Image (tube, rainbow, N blue to C red; front, side, top):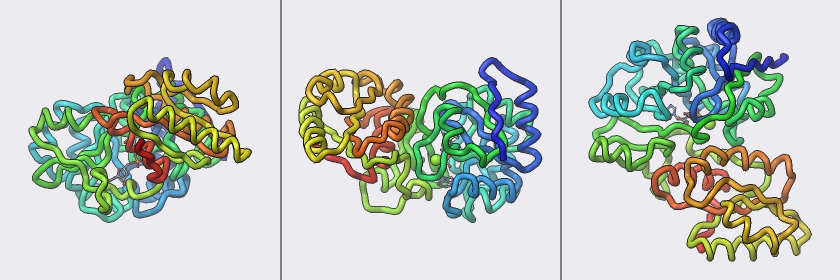
Length: 349
Ligand code: TXA
Ligand code: MG
């Protein structure tokens, strides 16, 4: 199968109409959202959703989220909207938020993996919104990467993972946030974050008065409630170690580890802030450095994170050392992705 890439950065009604037609015909289209690129199928068509699992190589017990363009469509797929969900919707939708709600009968089992709940998200990206509106159906979409790989934040990254496996990619330019949506379970008495994202725990607590983190996110040895969160994820090819602590101590620890790797005759990649890399570039000149932005500029760090991880694959390093960030605000989502990408290999210094 040949994969067509259509440029929709300045609007392209014809390409969006063609993409909507492909979705209605039960095939797949990759499209931009404000978080990461999604791999979309008609969310009311179980066979079409099955194609998503094939193209991604995704485990079949990992449910899909449905993307809607308006409230009417949202109410088609959710049986009930609890008051806390209503508040979250009013405050943050459209936007980088996915709500877990009781599912309606219209939702196929292929989407929910047999659960009695469904994940629903209303993206704000204009290309995503018009694609869903023109297709006229909710669009089931996971991130548009091969399962386990970093999520794509550009059309080029989608193409690298899925070329020849899907008919069409809409290129809407780089994604604004760069990490996937915050997932909030609204089916119990207290809202619970199952996956941190651009809408922070602090913002949700301020709105609702209370919000929990899923036990698996609190570092407890519990099964994550979002099935997809149990897999190693977002991983570049080389093994990754994350260092957290005071900036000076982190710099020292990364430096020592980098020297050790080089002494063993291997190549090392370092991912971190501009401030850290400036300190290291003279001392480990042969290291491959990727800057994710300035220390503390969490929005920039989030938006560059996956592209940096993917860049190391092209540079073919043997090991990657990464500088962690504080876990406040967007930092919680960044650290969640770094921890997953490292398979839990985190060094506290
Ligand atoms: O930002 C995003 O959410 C992106 C863009 C494309 O919208 N999508 C995305 O989808 O990240 P995906 O499939 O890569 O991640 C969805 C996560 C998975 O971990 C899945 O297990 C979880 O949501 N999930 C889906 N339905 C669920 C449900 N009913 N209950 C609990 N977790 C659910
Ligand atoms: Mg994903």
